[in-house]
Length: 603
Image (cartoon, rainbow, N blue to C red; front, side, top):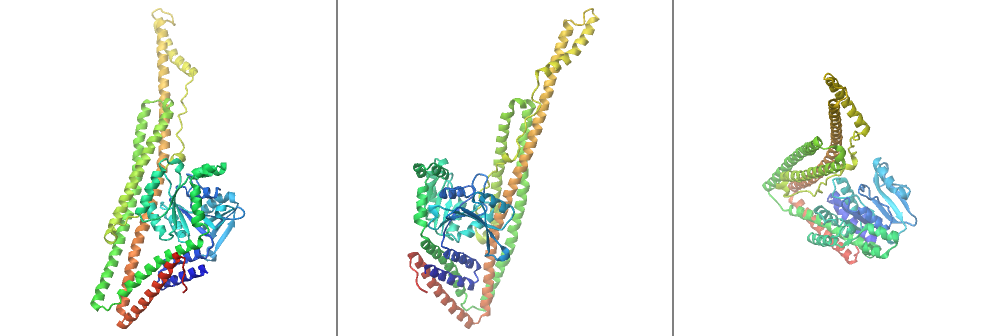
């Protein structure tokens, strides 16, 4: 009965959206309708990449169902629900059977992550992975979904998460305790609360962050200043998993999970109807407000105007449309030129820094013996290269901010400060992908070889000086010839050692040169990938602003033309229609507001 009344309200609002040709609001309400008819209570686990979302899901259900780790990034959502027996499947769209058709392929639960990765690599139209587990926390209909990271250079992942947010009953925003909430995280929270008002913040990794309490207090202030009312749960997924393995209740309490699970049980699980009413009321209010604003603007335009007034308004709107087209061309050129410069400058910047390092390497091996300083030298080399990488990416991040400001300057007259929220570009760690430089092979010089080298050098000295002294009546082997042999033998040994040292130094320089060149290639690739991500994010942000403004101007021009074509009788009739529609929307808003009071009036 409650679901029927909610669906009726949503359908009424959806019909109004269709009448006003608001496809964006229409699609949003269709998603909400799907959630109302679904008895499961969907809780999204959202947040930026590398914050511990997947580990949190694994810790809640006490099973490694979601891929986690430093080198793992969630690309496809994974849904975890209750089942009598462990099970897993891949859910795919099947375009040939329509957009709503889904294909489900069962897979072994212990190989769910491997199958997800393979499906993504093969380019299959994967929608999500689904896992069923016999867990008490899921018995009351609670369903958890691990989502792709948001705020990253991949805008596709952010779009995927936001698309699911409108269908969720609640969200757990994950932001680890190593740092306070970032500007992009707060912006995402504001954005997502417009789609789903039931949000809590989870702060994992308290086991590796001694100052997590101070971070939590700072986060409370950030949330209050942003006008976001929510609870914060500090937890440790690692401690939770250890406690579950050891069945240690005290250790589990230290993990912080009992409070989070209590929240899930009492505030979410089993309260699908209440949360659904809140979700529907929130979204209906947002939609009705936008529809009402549009109708009031149209109502104001129904007042009789002279031909001169209409012409002035039309010319003004057309000039603004032309200005927007020119503005779009200018910011696109500014962005394109800036990105091209970044591609060229970033490669030169790191190569210049690597040349400075190689210059110091050459100076080092002009004097030092690689055999004696190799291990210490490698540590120094990696430290210097790490500093160079960090400096290059800090410079790249500064250039990214400057480019965003330059593009925004082209739009400042129309939008003011319209900078997008772009995550800071973090330096990569390419050392694992590059083979370590090899120590020169000619390091050993056995004692027997040294003796033979000395003998070869001394033989000529003894023979030469012996023959000279025989002319003075001395025997071939005498003090002079033997002394000369010892001197030349020592000189030959020293020259051979110097020659071997030079070969070792040359081999060391060549090995380090190859290592640095390979590292330069890896770093430049990472930098170019980051630049492409920045390009996509900036282009999407400013394109959205431009398209919204152009659509607004286009609607304004159409309204002016329609208004000019209408007679006074037509305008009066349309004004009455709009007033009646506003009254209907007011009634619909009132009925939607009663949802949060657990009261649903009849139509």
